[in-house]
Length: 58
Image (tube, helix red, strand yellow):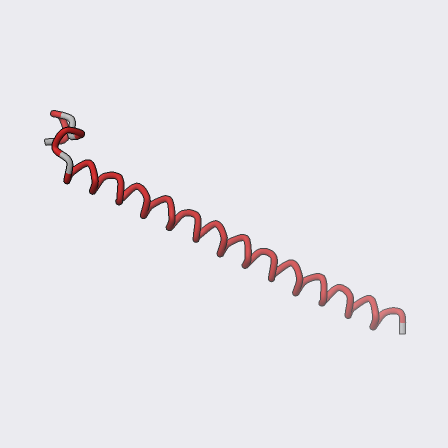
C-alpha cells in the first residue's frame, strides 16, 4: 500500500516537472522570438531612414 502511493506521488512529480519544463521552454522561445523580431524591426527602420545608416553598412 505504501509502495503504490509512493509510486503515484513520484509519477505526479514527474508530470509536474515536465509541465514546468515545457512552460519554461515555451516562455524562453517566446522571448527569443520577440527579441529577434525587435532586432529585425530596428534594422529595417535603420535601412528605411538614411540618416541612421553607417558608411560601413552601405
